[in-house]
Image 1: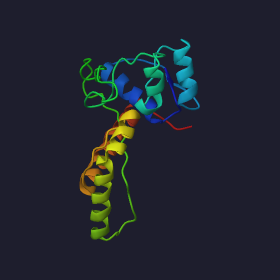
Image 2 (image 1 turned 90 degrees about the vertical axis):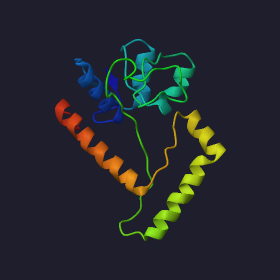
Image 3 (image 1 turned 45 degrees about the horizontal axis):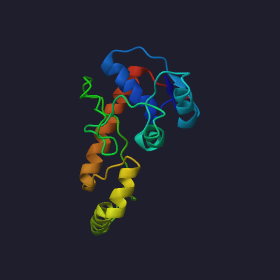
Image 4 (image 1 turned 180 degrees about the vertical axis):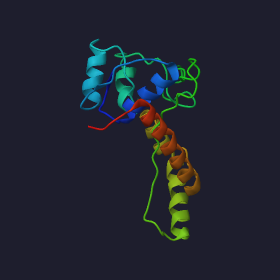
Length: 169
């Protein structure tokens, strides 16, 4: 199956799915999502994992069919598409998350102020609409929650990488 490069989020999401579904699928690294999507649309390869932000335009244009979403809940941009869990594949969640970070030792007051302002910005109607159009969802939280999430995800994906024997070129 095509995936944009070794170790990419697309590659890792497919490795997770392979492990949970007990599948044997050959990894075909591409130089980016666009050439991989072109081959899927052209029928040269049957399927790929793709992030919603990159794939939404071709999905909405009807050039590909989404089989499942690797999120804990259905995507707001594609509410009719089931999650992998709903489709019968437990624990196939592979979502990208982003956070704002700063240098170690930032004053706690500065961290709290930045976090508060970021939360306000993420709730602004224009931002919510823009995020939705790109298939993103704002999930504000505390710096401690972000740290805990990033550590847990690092541990989780480390195990998946080891089990799959993924090596970067």
